[in-house]
Length: 403
Image 1 (cartoon, helix red, strand yellow):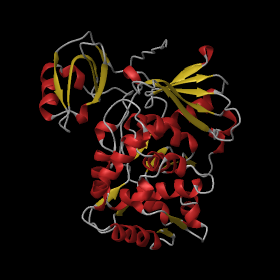
Image 2: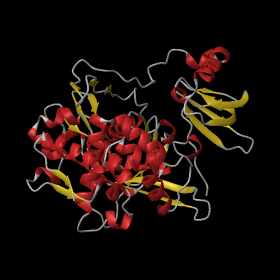
Image 3: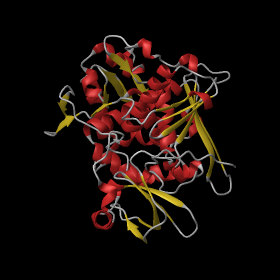
């Protein structure tokens, strides 16, 4: 399949292949390859078979980072205005996690045209950001394109900052280092704002093609901003999460849980984007009801036992009579562990997720999750953990229990 590679030059140092060596990640994983491209944030290497691998600098071992700084200091020069910077803003709410003295400071990101590297090309029907290429099958205005671009980059940053998702399972660009592809187009027979789809080779499991479609008529507009607030929650961020984590696999509950977590966990006020604001939101009844839908209707949620839920087959999870409850439960599980035991969830995911860049049979994902389940219990009985989760939500007036 023919691929179109768009190369944008900002603060990148693009090089012919340089040193070949074995690169070691903090996780212990080793990658053999020559340097193809490097920035302050990412390293791209190519092996003898011309296969490219993208590595976040923060994931490299200290020895390899020191090696790059010594031999290629130009990679680590101060970034220009195009470099995206994360900041902790003075207005960001700060809370203490349950059962811990550690303070959580919600990360904040100031977004503007320069920071997301927005580039408008109406003649070709496209616009670009640092991580995405948008093809306008249905053209939209530059103002609305900018608003959509900022939403997508916010979702990207939210996923990148997840404290419980293993770093070596994150897929932060498309195949070969290309930008993720987004089509601005009508979605037939649908009433949603976004949809992720991909095709893969049945024999090898390798991804052949993928994209996220966004429906123009359901897109929030820049004119919708009221009182300085823009809520970035919704289907598009959910689908972008699927695109970023598809190779990581996992059971349906895991994949839908993290996608809902990202889809509901971002909001913007006065041009500052805040991530994962759940405890802050729980003190606001209006926001709490928006975030926790089924459980805020009085009747609450009653789902299968924790292990059964996390290893539930896709067909059962998407059962039409239970689908809404299952989405809600998956979301609430990730919120609980994010706010209380992110390290425990990370330990579980390190075993429950695959580290191969391909799609595996569902039975493999279920088997991996079942085998990793004791990591989530962390020495407790299942009933004890289920009670802790139920009690946590009860303290906020939300009903969530296991059958």
